[in-house]
Image (cartoon, rainbow, N blue to C red):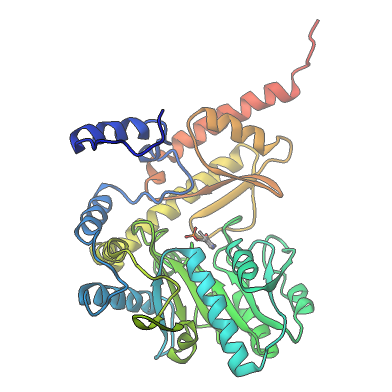
Length: 408
Ligand SMILES: *Cc1c(COP(=O)(O)O)cnc(C)c1O
């Protein structure tokens, strides 16, 4: 295969089938056999986001004066997010390109706030549970901050151990709602109390929770407080391209007040075009991602999200019951869309390999060894297929593992 740019262009009629051919090697996510990367809320949602994305795929969110449409859609998306998180009046936020971006922005905002308001001008650190997302490490690497990961206790943030790790240079503490590895909501109220007592910034990473947890609660599940209802929470990240079912490239980051959000802004100073000031790190911002998020939110509304997230809950309950029957134990008590489960005798990574052979593409944990599923509404239709294949996989691994190697 030649890697150079072709000398002569090809018509779309030729390119489209070639791209379809390329996609044949991809995971069969449309069948619901993928438990990561994809959030499948069905055909109707997929059509809305595709049309909306295409409609604004050339427009650029960098220019709100040129594209007031995008500015308005972003304002409405942010306001909708804020309305779900028990925020006080005056809370503010912005859209970003993803969870990692939102976490970067929260750390940058906290850092600039700490320099200006807390006089923290020297070395800084962040204290986070071991289950926190690596995006915090990336932010720390980039901004020369020390990342202090504290082992979890029963798979949750160990608040007492985190307290011991806080010192005068601690910029921020972190809790997840939920964390990605176990799908569990950290004790945010206790972290909030700690943050207030130590006068540090508490960021709640709700990247994979902000757009599912509020609806699960509306559906009657008793969730612990995890959002701005907890006084010490100063910022929250929530990804639209996860349980918001938006197209990839859409996340939100929220702050308790506009005054805190002001520290997020980048003022790059003078250059030949004047002064470049942007609200977030990005220059060019994809209009399609903003438009698709706006369209899906308005297509689903509260009712639609309650229904979709109810299907996720049902899928998780089916999977939990089924894996327990097969001898697995579920890690902690998941309440949202992620569930991890380990087996007391059988190596989960060998089961993982068997499931992969059967067409399932999911994540696995190495500490402890466990299977990991991030569920979508679509999985409610295929939970029984997953469990049947899991039973067969457990059988196959048991045979390998316990059969005498030499039966002569
Ligand atoms: C997905 C996720 C992130 C990172 O988001 P990206 O959009 O992949 O950059 C951060 N935190 C948690 C808890 C997540 O699930």
